Each structure stands twice: as structure tokens, then as C-alpha cells.
Length: 480
Image (tube, rainbow, N blue to C red):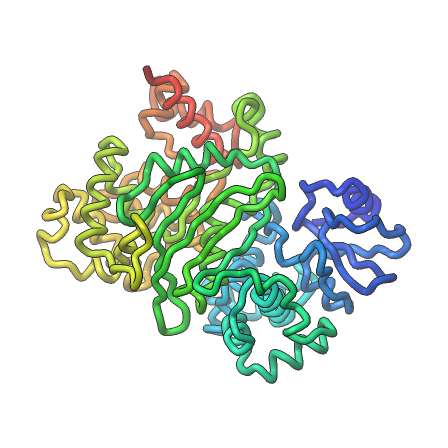
């Protein structure tokens, strides 16, 4: 992103939320850096410098603003910037990947050499991979100290610091503060759960997103109630898998989603928050997407691409949904989760079990899926996908290359283009995925076949996945 100082200054002067997270402003007169929407008095132009990332601002000696809290800024979507690989790496860093495998493991996850990743990252963000990771650790620690009552020792470990002493030294050197100085709101936080705000760029069509998720709720795993979405969650961190639950509700006055996590996810907070960001597509630029979709988005601006907390789960949902109604697929998936999903340590209302993982389903004996009402062809497809994921041959998360992933999926028994494109949309968050063979899309477009659907959809590239969500909505609304 080219940072034109005049454009950036106009954005901060107007507190334009469309630029939130797109850049940060360092203010030389105060020594802090802010989001473009910070409510403080607008600084003089000569005191402002602009940076692509929080890490770049900190590299130049600025401390995070305690009022606008840069750690709450929304991130970038996959198609927002040219450096898709660098952004994928940044997302993994924000979700704690560096603490587990270092730069070498990070490069392996995004499919490039370590040297190439370092070069891409420096060019995209203006800082090294390690500098970016250090800033993310500090911002997470700042958030935990501000918003929770976790002991300082637990905060240091959750943020990826090896010791409390190291954490204290870095915090004091970078921010000039001690951990206790940041605990201004923590006294009001519940002890058995964690509450965080995740920012987005308005508008956000929350009711439509919630409606999409509600129509596909799997009993025992998910629930929609009172304008909020809740579900169980299994998060691998280090050598452990943490089981818990989350709840997401909309706070439109602040342009945030309020996320509540169960206390059992204390050691997997960055991973859990990253999953919510992907599920709700919080990196989206609705101004860009809606402008490109034109009249298709006019009656519902800010529609997000519904994502996933787990790519393998989406793949199973896609196979279960082949040539059956959404209701029939839900029944099938609920039986599968009840029979093979791990039970939560402490159930939470209707939330009882996590969705079974790939290793579990791959190891099931013949006939186990049939006992859950899964037809033989779908059972073979699910177990083929499960085996590929469990063995590490197939990655169903955003760092995966979309075209290659679609091709690998289509090579498996029982997996066609519709299933692969649906997985690319929701599991990979790929904005240009488009299931052209979908019956509802063909009906609402009044098209004569797949080629006609593809020809009509070409006008919406590279945002065809968003177009598909709008078209599905119109199809549902057209039903008698």
C-alpha cells in the first residue's frame, strides 16, 4: 500500500473508518502511534508520520496509544494487498505460529523458503518477521492486561514470552509501562471467561451474516440466540488441544464484534481470536467489494464472506450438503458430531461437543459413518479428505494456494467442483471462488447452464465469492 501523506492526513482528520487498520499514524509531539479513527484532537500535519503496520510504527520508536488501542484495529483481507503470502504469514504470526515453530516453520506453512519469506515480509510491512512478531506479542499482552484478570505470569506465557522477567523488561523498554500500570479495566472482567472486542470496517451486514450461520447450525456444536452466534471450539496450541466455547455479538455503536471465550481457552487466545476474524471476514474492505459488485450489493451493503473456524469441518459440511437440503445436512452433521466429537470439559447450555477432527474421522472403521446416516459415497469422500488432512498432504486453511487446493480436492473420490469451490470460499476465505454448478445460482441468474453462469459471474471477479453469497440470499428470498 502506497501511503500518501495528504490522503492519510485527510483520513485521520475525518476519522474515516474505512482506513482503520490500513495504516497507523505516529505523532512526534506525543511519541505515540494511533489508528486513523483515534478520538484525540487531530495532531498538526508536521507532527505526523504514517506506517503500514503497528510494527513499523514501533520500529520508529512510537508507543501504542492507550485510548484508541491499535491492537483492536481490523486487519487486511487476503485480496487487499499484493503481498498475499506476506499477509498470510502475518496472520499466522498474530495467531501464535511463531511461538511454536519460528521463522522456518512459518515459511513452510506459507509454502516458500525462509529467505524468500523474509524478503517478502520486509517489502510488505517495512519490518522484519521477528520485529513484527515481537510487536504482536506485546499488543496481545497489552490486550490481556487491559481486558482480563489473568495473572501476569499467565499473560506472559499466553503472549509467547519465555519468562515473566523477559516480558517485564521488553514491556518497560518498548512502552515505558509495567504490567500493573495497564490493568485499568481488568477488575471488572469475569474470572472464568475472557471478553475481547474485534474491530471491523463498516458497514457490516451482521443480521445477514448471522442468518447464514443460523441456517446451518449443527446441534450440540453451534447455537444462535438473541442476536449472537455461539459455538464450541478445539484449538491446537503447542502440543495440546484446548476445548472450549466462544460467543460473538455485534456492538454497532463501536463498530466491533464482542467475543467471549471460555476460560478453558486461556492458552489459545490468539488462535481463537484469529478463527473468529476468519469466520466473520473482519479483514474485508466493504467499500471496495460493494463498489465492484454494484447493484448486486446495493440493498445489503457490508455483507461478509462467511468463513470458518476449521477448514476440515467446512469440507465435511460441503460433502454432507451435496444434493440434499440444508436441513438434511444439518441432521447428518449433528449425528456425526454427537457420535465422534469430543465432549467439552464443561458444557455450556446447548454447546456440548466439538466437531470431530480429521484424525478421528480418518481412523473410523468402515460403517461408522453409515451409522450416523451418512450415505456410502459421502462417507468415502469424507474419509478420503480426512486422511489427506490428517497426513498433512492437504491444508484447508488460508495460507493454502486456492487453485492447487481446489485441484487436489477434485482429485479425491466423491469431490466435485461445487464442493471444492465451497471449501475455497469458506475454509480458505478466497474471495474469487465461485461454485458455478450450484442449482440456486443457476436459478436466480436464470442461466441455461454452467457456462452461462460463469459468463454472467465474470463481471464480479475478483469478488465472485461475495457475489455468490448475495445470490444465495436472493434465491432464499424468492422462495414462496
